[in-house]
Image 1 (cartoon, rainbow, N blue to C red):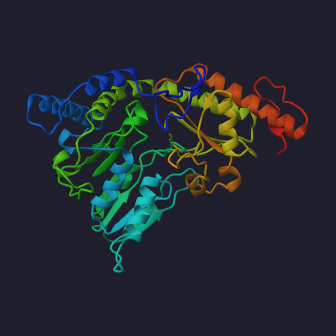
Image 2 (image 1 turned 60 degrees about the vertical axis):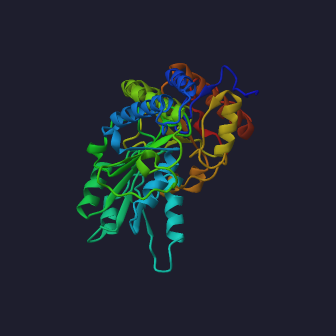
Length: 405
């Protein structure tokens, strides 16, 4: 089978879509692929596979401060999110308008499929201009009692990197009797967090966002919280998720979870790369907007607009220069669509349609910043020549902000 590979000098700056798989993870997966047994079999081959799965479960649990018994393996973050929303059995679903589509669309589907009696009700909370969820709006949505409610708020946004006050949200929601779920898919290896400090009842993870394989995730389910299984069949995952476990994927997930602590130590370096890019692109064009720059953000994420140039044009232009970035979420089947997240921030369509996301990670280097800035400057200069008949001559873009489009 011929696998198409990018040019060897191309750089990858789209970690929020998926991170490169770490070498140690690849090695662990290769070893697991050589295992024969089904984890549900009682013979020695099955017991060896079961042992590998349980060791990975311990590692994933340790990463978030949970116990192994509170970890349910899934096929990814989307399944974990859907399981939390549908399986909790709460009549009211309270989410924010910047959630991932696997939350928003799952909530819409659940509410639309309710009976005429209105078994499920979806309430979407607003955010402020930086993309932070309104606690006042949550308070109003919960009302006097929240025993029938599930609140689902992400820990960090996949497009802007904004970190939500999940601990405060959980305290408020629990005071009214509500359950709390958190989509923490973007957080491991980037910010320190734990399920106890967040105070959540459920939390979703996905291995491929921090150096693990695609197609495997987990749902943390706090002991004592009831959950209805979505996938029926055998008794795998203690009855919460039927189907033969993806042993190689789970082993890779566990290895990535164990390595996440190293990424946390590297977070200041990653943040410095992100900050350097933002400063230098603003120098090229002072009209560049850094979305949510005033809020606490993931150290690796920058959402930037190039005034007057459509997102898809920027992504394609940079890709031709060997730089991979994205426009908004990477979960729209390859389509570049207006960002519901940036619209929620109140950004006009003229800006949301010109935004790209740059996201760094464990393999990012200073040389990547140099290549990105150089490619962006050349792309910008080409537009300058096209629209004004001249080319910006500043080495780092000084004075180039007057390009007319």
